[in-house]
Image 1: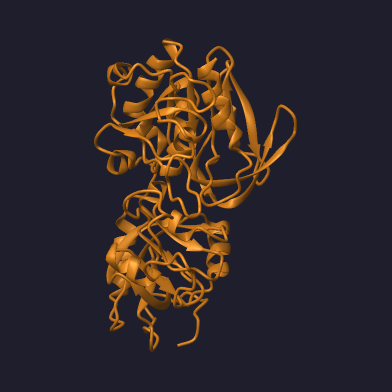
Image 2: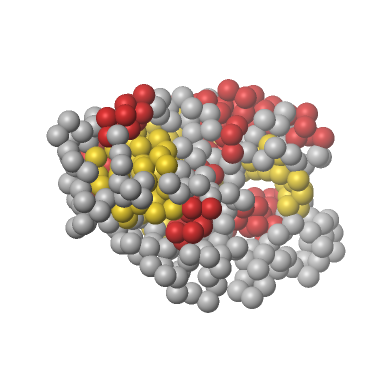
Length: 403
């Protein structure tokens, strides 16, 4: 079978010979290819990611819950998988669409082929697709609801799959943070990854003592709305002691930890839905003058708590090459992003100052409350994958707690 770059209509299409995977849209159109990973089907929102590395981090990022990722970089899976390049215990992206067939892994860190890893984790892959054409379609028409399916025998009920896509409610109004958050509080100890050392602490002291001076580290309570583990690692690297609480943690549960600062993590779904229970907690923390730092969904939660609104984006921002302008001095940071909702700049209250803006579409990428010790960014300063231009934000937050 040749690589497929066109869509067929459910009423007239015939499954091409050799096709073992398919992407079916709500209108009945379909893109065929070669399935890999788990057998079955999954329904979700189709998005695209422009990063050239880090497919395992992408697949395990909880912010991709409810989504199927189209990778624009053609060679996905060629370095296999390992035990280190993960952002959560399990993959949360429902599946992925790739250009080239997954080849045998070629990397000294490989533990298991990507195909096998996908299969063991119940995630469906589709290869042999013109992912650039698919990406162009998403850019023009927005992120659609689709079903990805894999059957080694090539047997697909396209009409039934299209109906499944059409009846899926979509991410707007959906609270997914409640589904992906950790269920218990825990003390986070790991530092950032180093080749040969894994995720051991990069400090010589215990996680309770700063390596710079002999004094206790400032204590950060992190609310886990679906956090990437590398965020916690970077907080540790910046000098903090980190306690992670579930997304549903109450204000009293936060304050029982006697925090010096509150961190709001990334996560999936509609921020307005998550905000139903998250925003009151954040507002109480702000009223108590507790310093706050938020990333991605945490950025949107802080904005909602301050009185702003969020909106669903046409296609979202996902990749490791997004330019963001810092407004205070005009410096441009190349950032890693993964979000389908954004803070509505037109709704920012008078006490909320925009600090960063996307150079792709002008959307808000950072805020600071002028009357509180609180700031947030839409992008991911911890990267993984991606550039590390923005690590200074972790230092800024933790150093302010020390002072």
